[in-house]
Image (cartoon, rainbow, N blue to C red; front, side, top):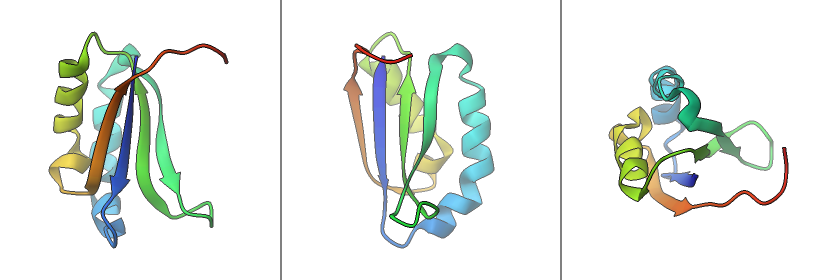
Length: 92
């Protein structure tokens, strides 16, 4: 499993909003590879400022290809994208 953590560029909320539908459609195409996904938010609990995804991929290259194809990434939304292999130990 892979954790993908993305931080939006400052002042890019309009880019996020403009590409949100395409991003969500892209995630839905992933089927059972998608474990969990959602935006990070500011302290107000509403303003989106990044993304966190848990995905089942066979290897790092597959995770990187997924991230490269994300409409958010293609639109230049992210300041940084971190991809890490992740091992679940606790939780449902």
